[in-house]
Every structure is written in C-alpha cells, then in structure tokens.
Image (spheres, rainbow, N blue to C red):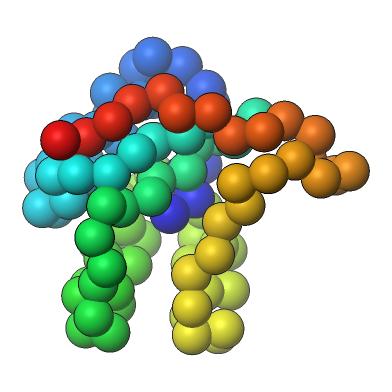
Length: 97
C-alpha cells in the first residue's frame, strides 16, 4: 500500500495502528522518500485484497490515486528500488509481527 503521510515518527505510528486495527499484524513499512509503503507478509485472495483496499480508502492515510490505478490494473505493485524519478531506495522503518 502507498500511504500519503509525511515522513515522521508520528506517521509511522498512525500507519502501524491502522494496519493492526484492520487485521494486518505482519509485514513491513518502508520509507519511500516522500511517504511510506506497506508490504504485507501474507498473500490475500481477491476478496481479501478488495476489502483491504476499501479499508485503506476509508482511512484517509493512503494515496487514493494509487488505489484507483491498482483497481484498474487488477494488481498491486510498489517499487523496491531507485530510479531516475525516485532516486531514494525505500528503507524499512518498522516491522509488524
């Protein structure tokens, strides 16, 4: 998931709380350079994925355009590397267990 929060300790805490509230107890939160990405430790079936996207949309913490693109593409992708437009390699800032 692509969160649309400024990079701060407070934002990480909000994301951790939100993910645990919706039942995502394991995964990693990465700082992407402008915000945060969440990578869950488990796979979701189609219904679980749609429910996750819906809960994220209602949270006010995510990039709504990212979710729109994921729905149109029928898949979720986030970069783990640097590129010319995004020179910062995402780094792990929190592990949910």
